[in-house]
Length: 442
Ligand SMILES: [Zn+2]
Image 1 (tube, rainbow, N blue to C red):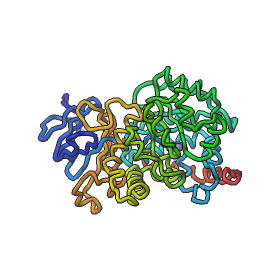
Image 2 (image 1 turned 180 degrees about the vertical axis):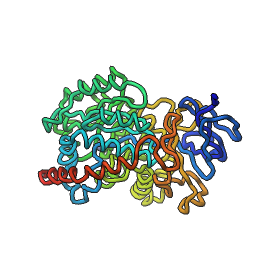
Image 3 (image 1 turned 30 degrees about the vertical axis):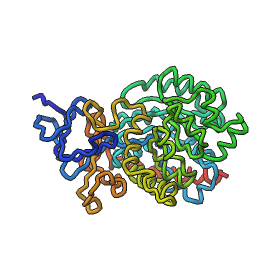
Image 4 (image 1 turned 90 degrees about the horizontal axis):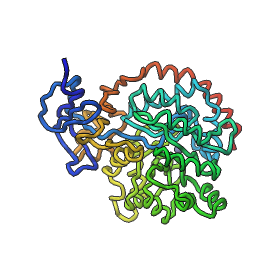
């Protein structure tokens, strides 16, 4: 018997931070062939699956626009004291990735994908790690969407050098679909001028994104000034490298001029609230948004936090308001609606996902559903205040490309218990490796 739709969601509250009709109550959503085909009240249609949306909120799928899948086994190993091994990415994170074996990589990828689905994430952009092809295979199975890339570096640990040509093979292998290969530059400090030039050239020719860390700490600014006589963004902008393909994570030390350069060149910036505000700086997020820059949200990986974008939204609103707003009695610096927009539509734009990032007819059916039948979510007078009260643990369903990948909190695409067992089994081995790396690090 053929059915008219794949999924019918009945009587749900829909939040659409980018649309004029931003809250739709008691509304039905019809999903077919990966797309949202109808949004109305009282739809009667024969669907393969029907979900009761009463007491639930549908959000555009959450997107983690900057993460490090292969750092998840560092969770809880980097205490405040360890953060003083400055810069930690060069002294600890890169050696950790460089020494990783394939088995650990596979378990890391499974654990991270499972963790993301449980927290309501529908798509992510990995900043680059040792085994992007392993990650691509796991993402395919998980039902998530992702961009994967090598950690492109041509100075530093010899076993961990990755060329633009190697990255190009990945880009050509994963050209379309849910998993796409991207280019990356780990950091200008670990890239020769030749690598930087080639990477931007290839990304332009192949019309795909480049994921990079940019303006993340004072030593990077000093490095750039002494190497080129220009600040990092200024250098890349003057070279003509910056455009809408570039996703720049952190951007925590921008000059006012650099904010304008990012805006003019349509670069997508990713703010990672916890790590930016704790370890780096308060980025000029309100100014970037006011200049029209699409700022997305990132977790920066699972080593400091639990890959929960609700936590990141909450921290961002609190931190940014405390820093840029409260002293001036201005409480509209970053609103919860802004935060939701950053975690959804802006993330979709950063990942170059076409027709995604909102709940609208004709758009990709990427939806995160929250169960509000909880003591901490009743009442919720303005549903847009969700980032203040909800956490990723309130997510009950996740739909990606029209497929239900989590239902009632149970992940349907990955074996949760098996992954947790594998992760526990390998933990002591990884612990030994972390100990060795930390004892050698500055
Ligand atoms: Zn990062």
